[in-house]
Length: 396
Ligand SMILES: Cc1c(C(=O)c2nccn2C)oc2cccc(OCCCNCc3cccnc3)c12
Image: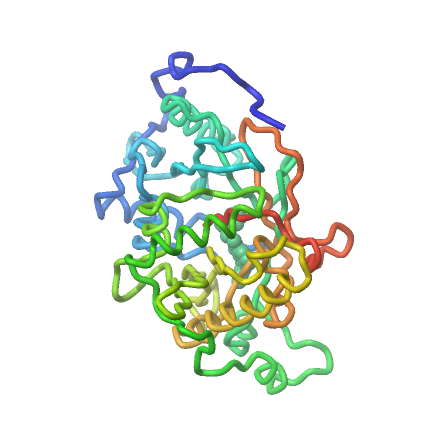
């Protein structure tokens, strides 16, 4: 386990961008400029990841990019675009954001690579490897040699694999858009009844997290994460950026704490990222929420797999995530997504999440790591309630 290519320095790295196909040119996007952010948003809106039968496409918003691509320490030259020389049209994009990661006991300055997108008309021109090499060059120039990225499909040796889980909130909409199907022998009314949830949150001391909570949340988060093997470390400033959304409306990330007698004992968060529904007469958008970071002191006073500690954590997570479902229902979210990472296996079944057909493979660039538990049982591919996962990083 360890770094593969060692001993290189920025001086070994070309100062100039790599050659591109003749009609194209590199461009560094300025995501502080609304017009340029719009160009990135439009490229991804029309050409980013779709599900296999091309029914849905991610509908990232400009606010989403503001949040996801500009965390503390972000760099303009890590927002890389490719334009057509003649027209100036943006036809490809890739991004990196700084991340301090730990793989087991090794901490490393790294980046997270995301939002690799190539215009549909430029596929199979081998542009993706060129974009990856160029962003690698720009990251290496800053003396950073490791990267974390996720891919839906399987490439050589993922460090871990998590499974997609979905919790329907508006089952009729999911049926209308073809995401859910009516199971054999069930009626629509039975499916609606199965997924009905309450209107009130139940977690004691539940309230929206605010900036002054960050020191306590960080202390709790670091303790909770110390039991996992692939984690991202956040400074207070980074944690605030990731969890406290400054907007009053159109929030992308929502975070709640459970405070008892002035002490924060838990927090939980989710982010909103709708899907465009392609070719559907009645629905243009699908409201989707993704479980994000959380931490709880339940069970923290015992070893991770102590039965009593596990039971306390399972009960706590069912309350916390159950209340996220209540809030999301109120926000008009149609489906609440989670992966099998962290301790999610402890609530997935009881909160009626269903296993998806998607898998999220995590890859570490220039770091050889022994496999890390992704929270799914090798044979059944179901959530592993006993072993759970050792993955703490939640990729957007
Ligand atoms: C994407 C996604 C979906 C869906 O595709 C989906 N839900 C409802 C309808 N659909 C079609 O379901 C999930 C469940 C957990 C985590 C997820 O994603 C985790 C974050 C993914 N990061 C971006 C990404 C996307 C695809 C491939 N690599 C990275 C997803």
